[in-house]
Image 1 (cartoon, rainbow, N blue to C red):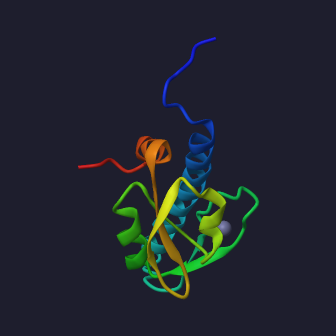
Image 2: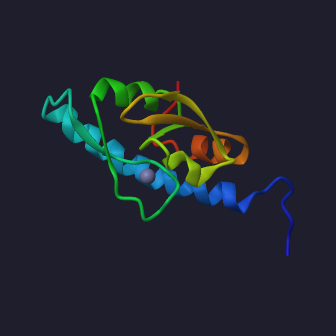
Image 3: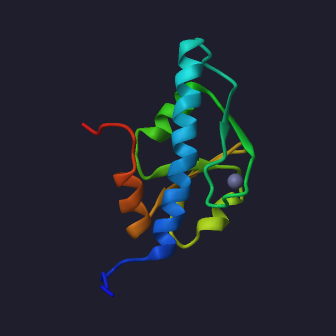
Length: 118
Ligand SMILES: [Zn+2]
């Protein structure tokens, strides 16, 4: 058995789970852009609870703003509790909170970002 120092299976699991929701949201944003739907786009909550099926309605511009940073995800207010202590909330409003992955969870989120980074 090999030991990898600094490895955190929980952080990794959380980041991978969130990356699955992010991949689905990337497809939703693609469809919205094709249909020239700028406002009221129904995205999936990107919290760490794999059973969460909540919808977060965002303008395409709001989504793009969050997605510009590969460690940032959005969720229904309060849902960020499910992945504490691997994140911190960086922005909040009535509809959604934006959180940033920390430590190993942040690294995995970077690695799994489907967008090519400049
Ligand atoms: Zn959620």
